[in-house]
Image (cartoon, rainbow, N blue to C red; front, side):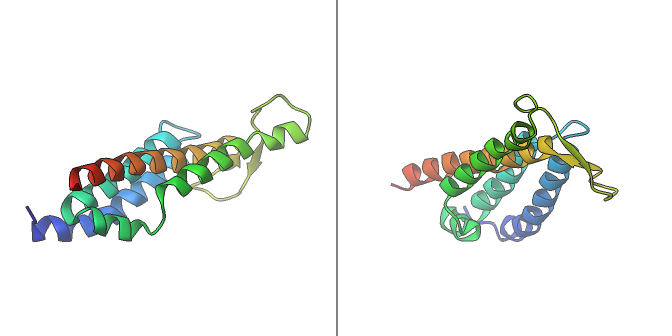
Length: 138
């Protein structure tokens, strides 16, 4: 059942939930949060948009196949081990750089890993959601 109120609200909530997911992502390497929780919040934003506007509108809004999000997330997460290997440290040993940006603080390989996990969780969740919606459509 289509609701114009939910459809209108979902457009604004999508942006707010995506901003909140990025907040959780960037605060996660210092405090609770991170890539997993941020990815789930971003996926829930698309789920809300899907419920309000339908699967075809949600797929058009995303503009990319979730498989590419999964592949990108895996590549970013795996690339986070390379800096420690290149300087001769143990695998996944954190390397930090002070960015001078107040809200970001120190950035390093854990943040890169979290960004990879963020895209991975977002892609997997959207792929499951779109697959289930396609089965329901048939």
